[in-house]
Amino acid sequence: MPDLPAAPRIHVIIPAYNEEQSIALVLAEIPAGLVDEVIVVDNNSRDHTGAVARAAGATVLRENRPGYGHACLAGMAYSFGKPAAEQADIIVFLDGDHSDYPADMPAVLAPILRGEADMVIGSRALGERESGSMLPQQIFGNWLATSLLHRLYGVRFTDLGPFRAIRAEALRNLGMADTTYGWTVEMQLKAAKHRLRNQEVPVRYRRRIGVSKVSGTVKGTLGAGYKILWTIFKYL
Image (tube, rainbow, N blue to C red; front, side, top):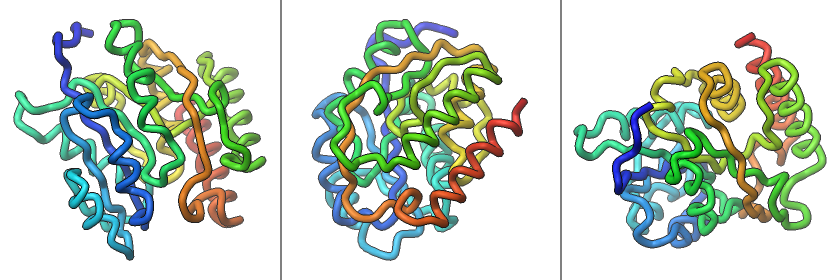
């Protein structure tokens, strides 16, 4: 894979569903001057998420098809569709609910910028977690999924965390397809199959603003768990 330019362009993609209370806080905490464009994908929100994000300076896309993967794919299509001189060299993903710390972005980007990695996962398991920020079912689900990734794909991860960075060319080559809960694990297992250089760095994690659409409900928890496991075995 070719070297990155001296001043790589960085795009941030933030999927957001009903995050009007948190999205401006997330955008305000992205280190000034670090990224070239922040893309908030309003994933069929019923509140003013899009308007708040736009007022805070983000590029806002509307994706009416519900699903985390749909939102990420919409952000990628926008980034990849820009004129060549404006396309990203690195793409960062993080959540819009204020659970991630955007201030940790330099640490997530550092291994890629040093030429040591193609993809970096911000690991909540390795970092500091606020009490109650991850429920027991999330912690167990991460352990199970990462254990299966190691056993079946030979790659070691400690987390399926949403805060991650990846070289844009590598992301394009992965052929991402999942439209819902399997998005993060699909990226990690495909990175293993494509023999990308993967690293993890510790990131901080806090209680989100509002109720989680996944772990906050029994239906969401079961649905996410099933889809993650299904995705892991699908690509064997």
